[in-house]
Amino acid sequence: MRRHVGEKLRLRESFPFIEALSKLAVKQCKVDIGKLAVNYWREYKDASQIEAYMSSELSAAITQEDTEEARDVVLYGFGRIGRLLARLLIERTGVSNKLRLRAIVLRGGRKGDLEKRASLLRRDSVHGPFNGSVEVDEENNAIIANGTYIQVIYANSPDEVDYTKYGISNALVVDNTGIWKDEAGLGLHLKSKGATKVLLTAPAKGAIKNIVYGVNESDILDEDTIVSAASCTTNAITPVLKAVNDKYGIVNGHVETIHSYTNDQNLIDNYHSADRRGRSAPLNMVITETGAAKAVSKALPVLEGKLTGNAIRVPTPNVSMAIISLNLNGETNKHEMNEYLKDMALQSELQNQIDFTESTEIVSSDLVGSRYAGVVDSQATIADGNRTILYVWYDNEFGYSCQVVGVMQKMLGLNYQSLPLG
Image 1 (cartoon, one colour):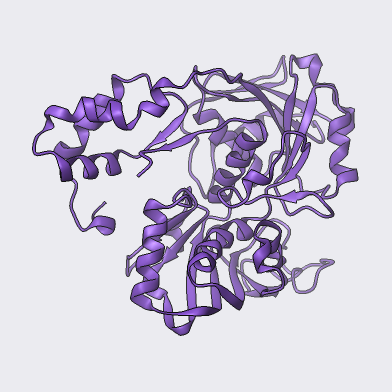
Image 2: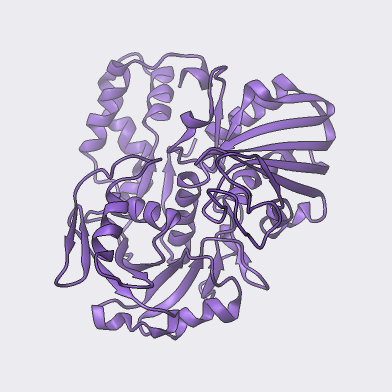
């Protein structure tokens, strides 16, 4: 909290709030202990009122009725994003968990495939070991992770699967293969028995809604059966762009993405259908196209036609940066811009999407595992008059996966409060 409010919050000043929280029947919410503690100590001199204060501040989550039913989730594909989504869903396992990972759908099914898939979930070169146990049930073709039974299904097409055979019904299918991006292709999932909604973890084509959680998730209607969670870069930059546009107004701008290499590039020079991507990813910086800047307007229509974008793939396995150069309607300076974005990271409706750092030493590997859509690097901010340049870090794998989970919750009508409200 010190970086936000200028005050050090000691353990003895915050732990009583955790104790008080443990005694409350709080349901389905995210609680910021730091905010609660800082606000309390500004008003009270001793700890005598903590329990009453906590009951009052968290009353909305105490009195609400837990009427929402748990919903089944299927991961179609089990690559980088699929495995991180699995980790996020499994860590939420418990009596109050409403997103139940029930199955993973894969192509193939060669001998030893199940153990290799489990091993990839168990160990990750970037994100480290799985927090818990991962076992394989060969007889029933399943993975058991921290007690969660996950059916592994092999299929060559989305419409081949009958999920009801496995006790799965009314399921949300999260397609993280990137193979199908339009309504016709993604609609194949809806032909499977037991599947009712589809979420794509990539930008969609056509009239499919592209959702950046925290910005335009209210666009999701009950009748929407196919939705896209956009791209990692679009998720990283859109919340920051919204914040800036809300205060200053954006005339136009350019987004340059310094992006870690991805699985669609070659390890060594070889044929690739796309320009330059055939060159060795670990050995080169590779200029390539990105549609992220234009895709912003699908989540934030007010910026339609105002942004251009390009990307440079670089020899790092994870964590990327967006350099956002903007011409504004209003004037600002570095201090004012940073103070505003810091406030957005702490107090606004975008606090779960935007993070903020004042570190002069932070580098990309420090952001591995960040759960935010983007992290504003305040030391690199440039602002003078009506021109500003912002540097936004993002874990293009884990941070994006957290955004995807938010869209999943919204699609299934699962709403979680962030408390305290102020």
